[in-house]
Length: 82
Image 1 (cartoon, rainbow, N blue to C red):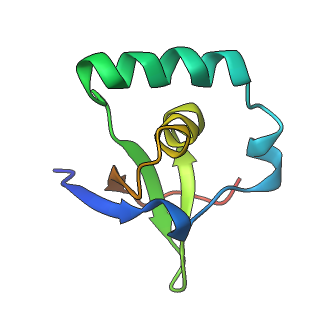
Image 2 (image 1 turned 60 degrees about the horizontal axis):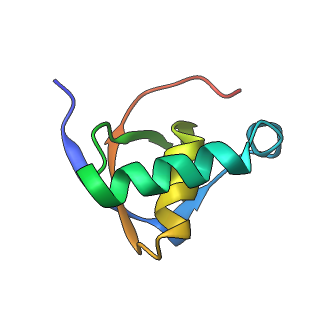
Image 3 (image 1 turned 135 degrees about the horizontal axis):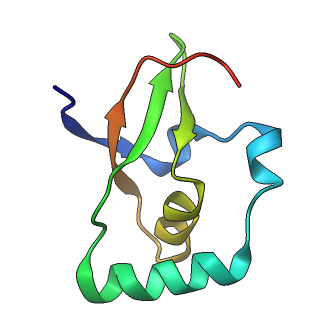
């Protein structure tokens, strides 16, 4: 079973290909929703031995950054590289 853990936002690497899919308007809407209701679904990251790499949840991560969060809830998963 996956367990939620806190991960420092600054310690999460977002692969370049994933950054290209970012939509600022979606980030703004998500940030507003997070302010009102909290983050409902943790992001997913994998650890490559040195750092955490984003697997799922780019817009949630960016919304947390936009809100000034220093940590975010995340599931640590086993995933193949993109």
